[in-house]
Amino acid sequence: MDDINTTSNEITNENVNFETRINLTPLLEHVNTIKKEIETVIVGQHKMVDQLLVAILSNGHVLLEGVPGVAKTITAKLLAKTLNIDFSRIQFTPDLMPSDILGTSIFNLKNSEFEFKKGPIFSNLILIDEINRAPAKTQAALFEVMEERQITIDGSAYQLEAPFLVIATQNPVEQEGTYRLPEAQLDRFLFKITIDYPKLNEEILIIQREHSLQDHGKLDAIKTILSGEEIKGYQALVKQIRVEQNLLEYIARIVVNTRENAFLYLGASPRASIAILNASKGFAAIRGRDFVTPEDIKEAAIPVLQHRVIVAPEREMEGITSSEIIKQIIETVEIPR
Image (cartoon, rainbow, N blue to C red; front, side):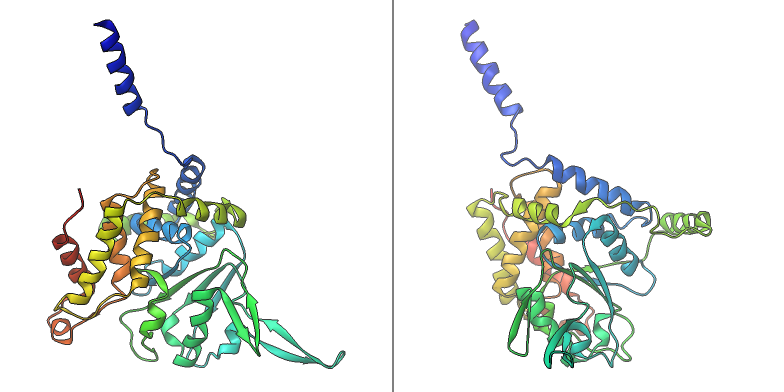
C-alpha cells in the first residue's frame, strides 16, 4: 500500500514540477527590465509596450496610430534607447524622395566611378514619423526593404544588417497633406497598434512626472538592456515555441472567416495567418511559456488583422470598425479543446 502511495506522489510531483522545454528565463528577465525602463517615462500603455516587445521578438514591423501627443514617438525612442543597436529617425514629408531614404549613387571624381551613399534606412531600428505624409512613390520605396530586408539600386542588391525593424507613426485624424497607405504596404506591418488617450489618474501622473523633471531629459536615465546579437538569439528562440496542430487550424479558421464575412469588403491574406502564428509565439514567450494557447492567438489577432481588412462601405458609414468585426469573428470561431 505504501509503495502505491509513493508511486502516486511521484507522478503528482512530476506533473506539478513540469519545466519548459525551452529556457526562457534570460528572455523574461530582459523583457521585464525593458518594461521597467520604459515605465519610468511612459505612464500606462502596458498593452502597447507588450505588443512592441512581441514585434521585436517576432521580427515584425509596427504601425503606431494615435492623435498627436499620446507618446508615439517618445515610446519608439525609449525602446531604441534600451537596445544597443543602430537607430535612425526619418521624418516623412510630402516632398521626400525615395533617394532621401534609401541612398543614392554619387560620382567620385578621384576614381571616376559611382559610389553608393547609404541612406538612413541602413540601420537596425527605424522610426518613421508621420509615415502617411509621404507620396506613393516614396511609400513604394519601403516595400522591398520591409519585406525582404534588402534594397536594390542600380542593379545591385544591398542586404540590411539584422535585426531590422521599422516603427512607423501616423495621425488618424488630420487628413490635409496626407496620403493613404497602400494595402500592400499595410500588409507588411506585423501590428497596427492604436493608442488611446490616457485615463484621468494617468494624466495626473504624466503632469507630475513632467513637473519633477525640471531640466532633466526624459531619456537621460534610460539604460541599455539588449544587444543586437541577443535580439537575434531571442528571435531564433521564439521560433521554437510549440504550436499544436489544432491551434494552427484555429488560426486558419479566423483568417478564412475574414474573407467570408459580409461586413468586410476585403479579407486577410495568408501573410496574416503567418503573422498571427509568429505573434502568438511572441506573446507566449513574454508570458514565460514555450507553447502557444488560444489566448495568445486571440491577443495577436486584432493588432495583426485590423489593418489588413477593409470594412464594407455601408458598414463603415454605420461607424463599425475593423477591430469590432474581428472581435466578433474571434467570438464565433470555436476554440479548440
